[in-house]
Amino acid sequence: RLGSVIVSGAGNSNNNNFYLVAAPGVERSVIDVGSAKLDGTVYRMAAHSARGPSSPYSLLKPEITAPGELIQSARMGTGTGDAWMSGTSFATPLVAGAAALALQAHPGWNATEIKALLLNTAKPMQHKNGIPYPESLTGAGFLDVAQAVTTTVTAMAEGTDGLTTLSLGALALARPWEETRQIRVTNHGDADAKFTLSVEETVTENGFGIELPEKEFTIPAKSQKLVPVTFRADPAQF
Image (cartoon, rainbow, N blue to C red; front, side, top):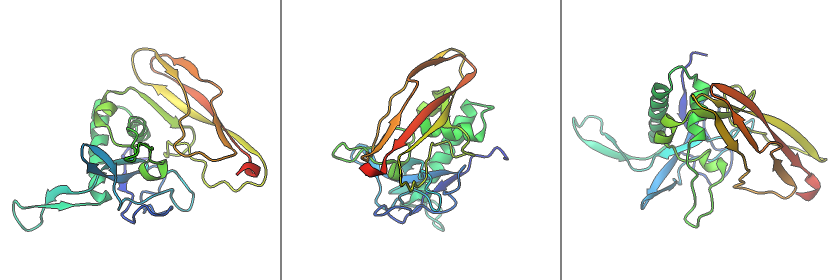
């Protein structure tokens, strides 16, 4: 409500189990940040970074990942000395700084649009074997500041009160289920933007499917469009 972009670390409870992300990152409008480590020239998830989803509403958290292992920082009481430290608390200020740069590049955008922008432009992360990390570990992926400051389109789930991601929560089903949600795609730029949509699944489950009723469309400059996404589940196939 104040127009501030709030960023918080996911916590350092490790990622050996689910529902480990810490407050206040579990709040809907907060950008919840996971921690990555440098493996040669590639960033991968740090073992200390807490895994989602959030409790008690099973929201998609963490939402983005940034460097957070062996970060060089100032050592208190040494004058000019340094220390090498790890934790999501060291990944968090990098995302906060990225949010500030994104707001500087896109003056007039609100906090929810800045959050969506950072998530939309994050890069997917992979295990060493090439398998993508699930969203419960990395969120949207690895922070990409350069892409964020030059992108003029945002996509966010409609009616999520600052969450921006399309989160279904924990489903307890006894019969076939279907629901259609809306994603608001906004073209903030000065030229028409054309889109071709597809679904990529990092985790699959028998009996669960995602469909895009509308796969191609164009949004004029300074305009927006609601795009439907349909989810189907049949618990008999789980």
